[in-house]
Image (cartoon, rainbow, N blue to C red; front, top):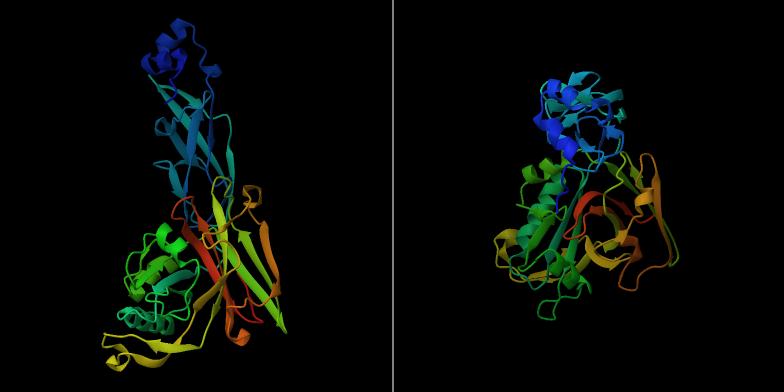
Length: 346
């Protein structure tokens, strides 16, 4: 239930400034605060929302005029044009010409984006799936044309014929309402339309965090370090980290009724790449503590142990790591990948 404004607040909105004085109401005792869900560290070019609440916690954002360095915003959101320090202030219009200034000033610290934006495409596929070569082809073509794509092929056993079945595929399919194969998800947000333009839309977004991946393989011992660096304060976000092991150069016959790959059906000894073999975390992600989600902090995840038994050839492995935001059908914030014995920076 929405909180009711205190009687004094209602009177203040209804009376003129003269009547306030006649009624003996001291406007100097009316207080409100401003804040942003992103703390006070921001990125240039990213839309930042601001909020205002009165002394009783009521949302009064719509009644407040925000300003940056004394210049009115024209709303409650703002894109900082350049790096630097800014002062965000606000005035509450009480009606009748009376105003109150916010108790606090947000000292905004703004930097240019410093983490590369990458895009995750998870292809729900199968060796038995007669239409799946279409998505595989379009994804291969997109990767040749633009950088920043991180692919993961998630196989379903289908008619018990797929040798690359991922055991937790149904967990992901249920969460993201995957009911048909192929279905390529882009950033766990929507179905990819199989065009490079769709990918470019995501690559142009400014991301609030970066992901780095480093790993070394010695014999069967695999040591992996994933770091999440925060480029903004994200104190309210529910974030989770997902870490996958994928494998390239796997071969199996591929069903095909498309015109791609010569129209063969099946395509004999077809090469399957980016195949999801193992999830080190819950495939929906392991929680990142909110206390870690502050500007310039690096949240670190590590693994030290044997190569997963599902992997055929460790030399063809990759580590894929990404952060998702939300509690249901969480969306990908940013992603990175590294080949075996490679360090992939932010």
